[in-house]
Length: 252
Length: 201
Image 1: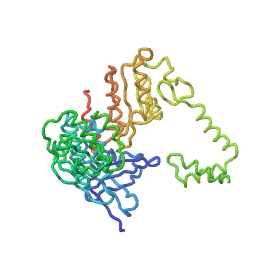
Image 2 (image 1 turned 135 degrees about the horizontal axis):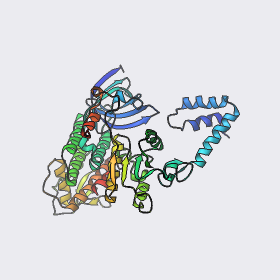
Image 3 (image 1 turned 135 degrees about the vertical axis):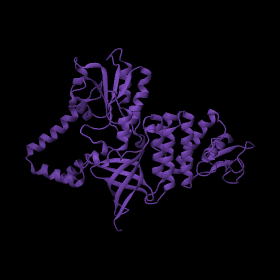
Image 4 (image 1 turned 60 degrees about the vertical axis):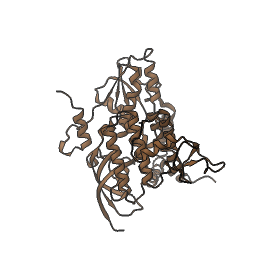
């Protein structure tokens, strides 16, 4: 592959210190997808990357790409946008970290995904500029997670039965199967896994996936929706995200 | 069959942070080429540091005597505790000569993205120390001196949240333009923070 010089907006998804002076960063780059890059002397010199190699920042990243199977070489990075409102709140930082980690898992190396990048940046802006109550924060979080999963093509059925496509209503029992979604009593396979879930919880999640705030929801609906959302992510990735513990500290 | 001693030494040295196999090999051959007394002194120093250095039972600093020289001193200001990430940060703060209070070493920072939570660092020890302050130090201020990184800030915010109910003032070390710095070349985040936390002169 010929040498490719890239200069594009990006968001830092992860940083890992390497040796005494260097730092390896994982970026989600506009038009280029997820990319790992080596930032030489990033820890020794604060001038070259001047505070840019931190999560929760949009940067202008310049790097040299010689071989997609190896780390790119980051030559410079400049902060384009930071989110002071997020950085000054433990709750918001925790939610933003969860969103960052989920994005890191959903993005693919070298596959452009500007929708996911814009979704994450929009989420940071919304967290930073508004969202002062815990319910508002949770709504933003739920909407982000559902839309990110939807964008990756993994959103399970929430408004209809995943198997017979009947609308979710109160006339029957419903279960949530992480890999499929809502399943009505008639379609449930004997012995199949899946926890019982009430229609208001499924409607709450379906509304959030459409970015509609819907009617005010009872606390028990939010608590159950939180658990279903976590099952959804766990079912998709086969494990919890590392930052899930922080999410629990904020939302419990 | 016993493993080749050179390969074993390279293997052990390569486990050190920042040491790759090439450097480990170079170090191993340096040790091989040095006098036998050097190898014995090096081995003894490594064993001694593990056997004699302990965590201070109050501040979690690395020390030979417990309590450490800072916690054991009668000349320090016992109303203030400076919270740092690592023992090396404690040395850096101490070297300024500007702080005469006590310390608490966390041995890390919270990191949501890496799954490092409150139970993975020495936060519980700090809380216990402050809850018992009627019997111990009369602490009225905790200064959080973690690095101005995302994880350092997260840790500072969490400490502030934890200590709020204890009625202790929690302050954060200032951050912004370094001495000798240039506004033109300062990044937006740092300059923005410097403006947000400006002080009256």
